[in-house]
Length: 455
Image (cartoon, rainbow, N blue to C red; front, side):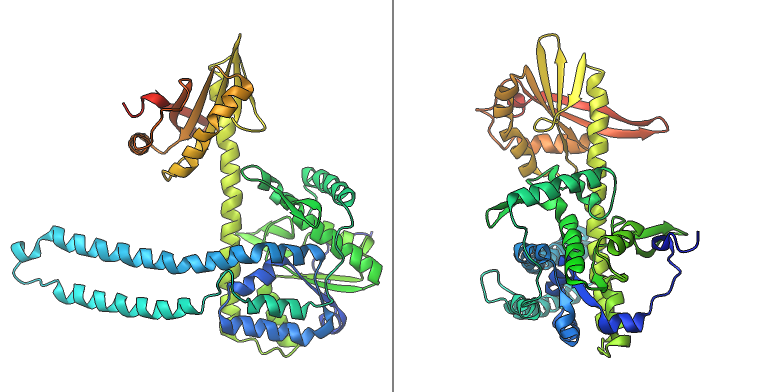
């Protein structure tokens, strides 16, 4: 039995020194996009590490494509931080001013003088905002020359894999990815819900791709290149921390042991590799210090760690949000079934279709915890074509709120928007999800015809 299942043995030591001398280093899209999230010092140290690897770096074509497609989104997100911090400062100043005014210290207390506090705070924020303006001048603009992009393109010039050959080739791989995702075969299956709430397709060089299969395409291209180039050792660096890449065991909290056994198995049997290692950015840089004499500072390691931690929080928030949305749809579906003869989940808008003899009623479910009026208005705009498409007797937009207060507040907001062109059979239902030992249930709080909201 010994040696039959090496992909499951996480205790077998690799010859790291030899591997680092000869391996091909392959980078995921998120590692390249993080360059925009790092401070200049950290970015430069990472670029210097790339240069030390010289011609032993490579990226799949899909990584290069995703980098080019997504870099402006990352740049824009970084630029938004400036306006966000200004809003925080303005809010804090207003709360301080209103709080002191509410206390009426000049009338009710003879000893407390708040003026030194307010004056000092005004000077502190003015100095900070002045420095912020200078920093923003150096922020990468969306339509300006992009030195990070230029450096990345220079480092990987001639070190990018070949593109997919045709739409037929992509469609064939999409079917394989779909089957793998359903069977929970890594990598990428945790991205299966990317097409639930937004368009998933994108177009490049006459070929239509699906975003949710991106991880599979990256992995497939790594395996194909390894086999065709007869490369024997590959080190893959990714900032994706999800379980569809890593073997994670719960031992007083999640412990990451290494790449999934399925990946090691395919790297060996499909890619014909002798050694396959996988690192997150921080571990990659720590080993670069040891094996490349890269001189990565502790400050850089700390920042890389913090950026990866933020990315992980964002990824798991999105995942949990999707799980929550699925649970809500199922809970509301059970409630709808208690009201109608039949009800099923619909693949498009609305989320649920119910029938009663000759009547067809639609239910569009929206999680509405933050009074996102634009999202609600978008749902309302889709009502008329959906009513006509399904010949609906009525369409109910179900808003999941936390309490009666949120429902009333949303009604007050909706009164500001005219409803003259809205059909008579469009209704708004407010409700909340409650949990018990028996499971989750939907409790209706209020129902109103949309035309009657502003009356």
